[in-house]
Each structure stands twice: as C-alpha cells, then as structure tokens.
Image (cartoon, rainbow, N blue to C red; front, side, top):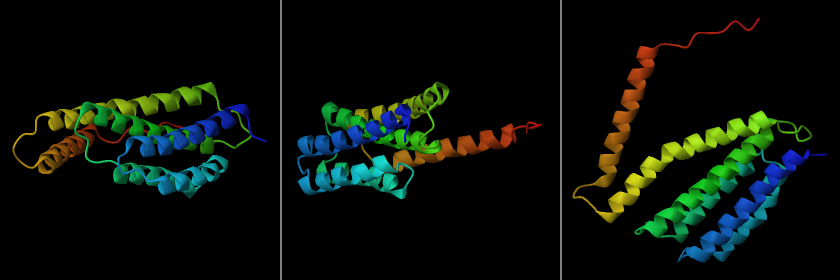
Length: 177
C-alpha cells in the first residue's frame, strides 16, 4: 500500500510523461506517433517502479524524441518550448528520485519535498543563463564556431571550479557521536 504522497509523486511522473509525448507530436514538425505511443506505453512501468532503470530509459527516450521531432530552435517560441521540455524532464527525474528514496508505504516528509523543490529550482536557475545565452545567440549569430566558443567557456568554468575546490580544501568532518 502506497502513501498518498507517494501516489502524488507517481501521478506527476505519469502526467508529465504523457504531456511531453503529446507536446512533442503536436509541436514538432517531425513528431512521431509511434515514438509517442512507445513513451506512453513505457510510462506506467516507470510509475509502478520509479527506482528502476526504466526511468532513465524514459527520460532518455523523451529527450531523443524531442531532438528527432524538432529542428534547431530559431525563434523565441522554439526556445521556450525547449525550456518547457527540459523542465518536464527534470520534473520526471526529480519525482522519480524522491519517490524511490523512501519505501512506497512511507509518506514523503514536507521537509524532503521542500529540499527537492529547492534542488530543482537550483538546477533550473543555473540552466537559465545558458538557455538565455543560446537563445540570444540564435537571434544574432556571430562569426566563428559557436561550439568551440562554448566549449572554451565551459572549460574555463571547470578550471575555475577545480582551482576553487583545491584552494578551499576538504570539508571538515563532523563527529557523528
């Protein structure tokens, strides 16, 4: 017997998954009804066992379905739809992760839900600048290879993070007694 909070998390997985499949077919010029049907058929298995590998398969297939159904975003509307799909994939992932973190019969504590919502918002907040940069670049394409430019920026960011972590040192361990 599952708790009501577990049922709610699993309902979120199902609703968002089906909505993403339908959205991709409706908006994507190359949308595939067969791929959408496969995703909708896979969804109940993920809802029944969100801790299984099928959840990773579902998220991956949703991403691939979106990529194969749409061309490279050119306008603001295309970029907004891409962001909506990314938020949907994040929602499926977070709901499945939180649902599988506890036994099915255990109610999900409010503090856990708040913590996971903060984590999701942090991921979204960190992703928005990259999304905005990509969207603005589509509007005014500068000369040069944008992939190399973004790879260089990402490499510099990783180098900065590595330097910061090496200077900060290891965190102090707390005594668990």
